[in-house]
Image 1 (cartoon, one colour):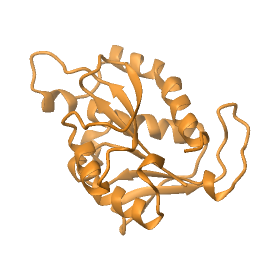
Image 2 (cartoon, rainbow, N blue to C red):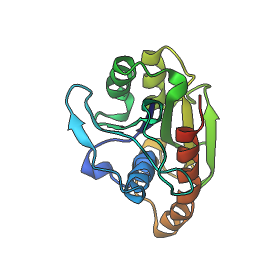
Image 3 (cartoon, rainbow, N blue to C red):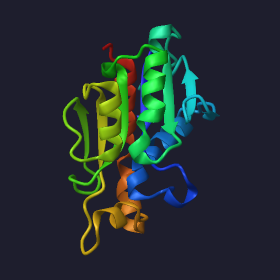
Length: 190
């Protein structure tokens, strides 16, 4: 079983902000895969979807064994409290950090740069810090989505701002690259 999390702040005023790019991309992935809607689960303070089988990168349906079940999760807490959803889910379903993928914004990357990372530090990202602290491990996988740092504004103001039209185009062009990384994570044995 694998756990895929997209970090963001859950309220409407944060939708489509740079800080929520992980949430935006995974929502688009679920829509493309025609997966059911996420449902709120108070026990985990998150919207979750547990599904199997999924399609592979070639669009063909794959087997529905329990090892291919995937939990998609969007914490319904502020970013710095993401652990309140992730740690209980991982503990209940006995999911090791190596079977967890987190999609998140990356201010140290230029806009549109995408990178897959296994383990490592948090680079000051509050959502990642909260997850690492409660899992007692930083060995989970990440898809880092570059949003840049911005100019002439504070980091918080910048990441909580909306994408400009030309920036939206850049991010739309990066969707398939992100979708391929999600599929690879799902289908590669850990």
